[in-house]
Length: 515
Ligand code: ATP
Image 1 (tube, rainbow, N blue to C red):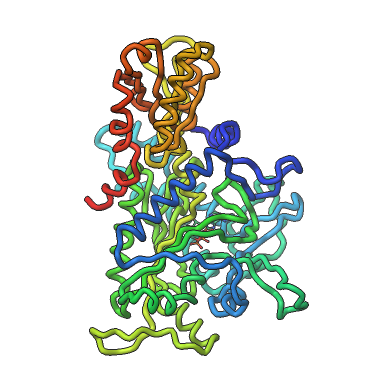
Image 2: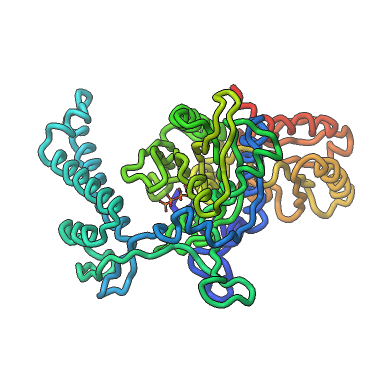
């Protein structure tokens, strides 16, 4: 589905609104509406339970957004949490310099794809795309150009060499997408942390940051958690919470926000075992994504070319968003960097005594970090679809349906009296609603024709609709309509809970992770 359609659907159906919209909005800040918050909460519950409930050795915390300013010195964020920015002097538009080069590389990929499609048509069944990439001079030229640009970008980013980055943009003759000119400023580093002031303390001393990641709240609590819960390494700490980044360019709706939510888990392991755990967590996390129905083709691993200062291995789980494959989650082997740094700056030991090894050490850390909002967008862009309805005519022949996994759906069941102005139907429906609402997020709707009400429920992803009609009054049965198959079955009111429960339960979804 077209990206614009997804954005307008989110607004029209109460999933997501622009923040402070009546004041023309605040760039890259969004509010979740009534259905949005339900879906988001379900995503969080799915993640939280998969971490803390299914793993005896993972516990949760909820640390404060504000932290001692030394935290960010220790973590490297004060000195190194920068993105390179560049302005075009003609359009006055600001860009991330690294993203300009990445976009250039994506364009080359697009050209390669085009050539390959053309050749596949020409050569027919015997066509071997891999061989073609290696032998066709034009395609090989594009790929070499891309590889060389990628290498030089990675080098410049690792070295923090902004002059080299500017040189690369000039050499590749990258133009501003708005003005079309190559009239660029120098590339400058821009720190992404928001700052504020603590109480009445003026100046640098009272300077606080809004956390740019939740991870540091976990690191500084490492010993508190380990001691109070008597965990043994390996064990993990999970947290869901807001993070803030003053992103240079905020595009693509909730993909890149200035205030967003992260779901992070830091797993503390014995030194030397980190690669084994890194690989385990890669597998584990992909399984979590696939359990909601996401296909292999939509997900891929992407190894980092330039490792962050704290990592010895890092991979992104990329997801195919409507604007291409982009990072949805990061899995990083962070070594003992963070704990060692906090140990140094705080002067407090952050070590663990390993009874098996009979030694003290600073544990190594493997982390998984996923943006809740990006997961939300992944679900919206995959499962919201325009579908042809079999055996229907006119405007009923298509429907907009959000085929989200039922355990994540904002509303699980809708109760609909066939007619609004028949008191015996509406009062029976109210009775059924009351009963179901104890078990599931349930909605009662009596407005408009039944077909329109079904469509409204399809659009917000409600897996089941229960219709109360005149037969209900006679024999206590209702029709249960399935969102995906459109099948309707007649069942007794007493059977509804037992029928719906296993289909929408979080337990059912979690069980897939245990297979
Ligand atoms: P990107 O390269 O896209 O800026 P990142 O590598 O800086 O992301 P991490 O620091 O690894 O991201 O953060 C972990 C996760 O947090 C990301 O995988 C992403 O899902 C989410 N995230 C990061 N920045 C944002 C943002 N500005 N808006 C929404 N989600 C974000």
